[in-house]
Amino acid sequence: MKKILFIAVAMLLLLTARAQAQYKVVGKVSNAFDGKAVEGVSVNIEGSTLGTITGANGVFEISLPAEATLIFDHLGFKHYSTIIKHPGLDTLRIALEASYQQLEEVIVNTGYQQLNKERATGSFVQL
Picture: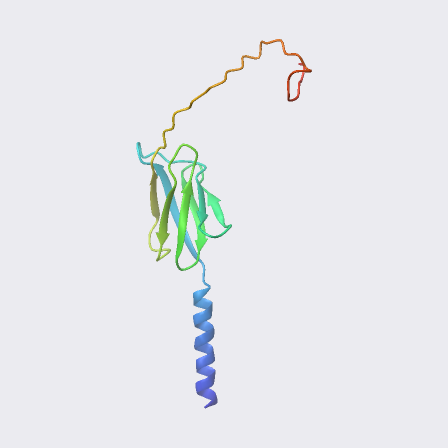
């Protein structure tokens, strides 16, 4: 009886350890238009504060639980998310699509203006 109880407890501990296991996922993020690597893409686990950023060659590495949703975000590109059910099988290849938005107003400041310090906001530095 003690032997059966010991085996049952050991199996339960192994299953618990397996359920909490973290898997390393490696991937590369590229531009869908030209296939070039995209640097600085934010890669986050949905519902978590864990994340990473792609390097100069678009490669990232992150540890995930057995099943998680990865969210990819970068300025100038559409948000992309994917569910990872079997981490560690292959290198992920993510292609982000460009996000084009029309600017309504652009202000260009040449720096050659006379500004009254009493009427302006911000700080002034004289070189």
